[in-house]
Length: 86
Image (cartoon, rainbow, N blue to C red; front, top):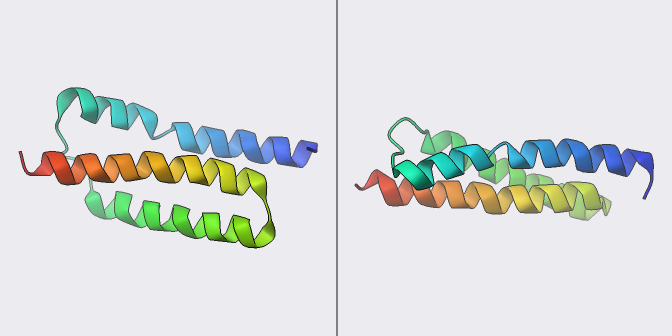
């Protein structure tokens, strides 16, 4: 692994963990009224495309960080859909 991959992993990790505080807040409060499903839907779709791009380029930092980010954003989308009904 070279320094470029390390920079890519670090940047991806920062982006990936940025969703965690919002997930934790929704999990604790069960409130999603002010959260946009459209924004998270588009973001999740974009992340899925980044994974495809990473696979096509065999770029592991892109695949790994966006794979984790996809999972976290899918959790957020689930919370929005689930708690929106309440």
